[in-house]
Length: 559
Image (cartoon, rainbow, N blue to C red):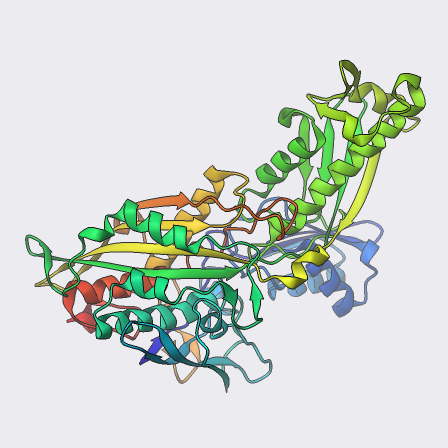
């Protein structure tokens, strides 16, 4: 089976813009739309030969990015070039049409070959993908790897090829590689289920993988079975008639489809600083960003829990290249990376506070960390309590400050780590007009510890909506003479709007993981979109009996 996906553009609500404030000493203070202030600082240092202490990049708030801010876009060096030449401040903002002139999700053509026994057991998987790149730069994605890790199969062949074209270089976009590769794999699995007359959920359970086949490692945790079970139960999957075109609501054909999802749970090196002030407030900082994911809130929660200081007395600083080192925000690894650094910084602060208490109060001199608890801004040993604020005030600096550098634990090396999901979709297809409505979606996600369920749910909702766009609407239509998109506006580049959205039910499956990181968190930014386009395509087949393998699935293709 061959599946094709088009080029797609990030289209965050906020366009890319850079404001360069030229300082009297020749240094630059820059406000940029970016997913990594230190990445931009390093880029400008290398391109313009400026010392890093002469460049400060700020990004306190980012109005969406989805990968478009992972590398500096061209308005940044142009604005800096102008500021240095004119020796004055400069602002450069891209128009919406100009937002279509740089990175995008690349087009793919995927060929899937599956061999299975009559009982559904996979005997062979072949996944070949062809992606595109520019002629001046190689850009590759992990499109086919997922076929070697989601299901157990002894014979797997994965092939990825790049075609250089006269176009701009692609760029990572939400769930890069996985959002595309899982379309091919999960649509092919549905076709196999139909060919064998086996329920799609049962087929996936038959081929459930306890280990990552690519690395031959066990998973640190994996509750995908529960995702299948709870998702199917919430959706009412057992009431599904497997025969295509067998379910109706009046003139509407009803289709039910499902797909699995997977995304690697990564952790990067990160640093964080924790400073306890004399008034009892805690300021924690790291040079990460918040692209609308709730980083401010989640890091504040982690700091409050790890320090024993009430959340209203905790402030988290980010979006500043002068703060402790942090990785780019992307790949669903911000909580696991920066969150771990924040947790460790606050724990180190507690140890420092205890040492100060021992020096000032003899009755605490023999106290061990196991005998001490921190709660509501106080240090307790048994019934005796000391104010953390007073301990900070006793210092010459009027504060207690620590900084830590966190990195992945060595015990992770023996395991594979991933977030998983099961997506169930109901579509309504007008039998006469061919119009498609995604009526309801159930997304069951296993992502380790979910630090803030409200914000995590919003991440999944956004991913599901984006998955609808990938399945039914999004497509960059290129002028093959100029190599540029013709539909370079939000009027002509179609994305889902509120009227397109039905009921979306998100449930988080309980999953404990003491290996992936100390927080037990895996991240949810990517997993929400993975599997959704395939589930919709499978539901459309169930509704109509027509298998559309060219995405997006538009009315003309269905008719």
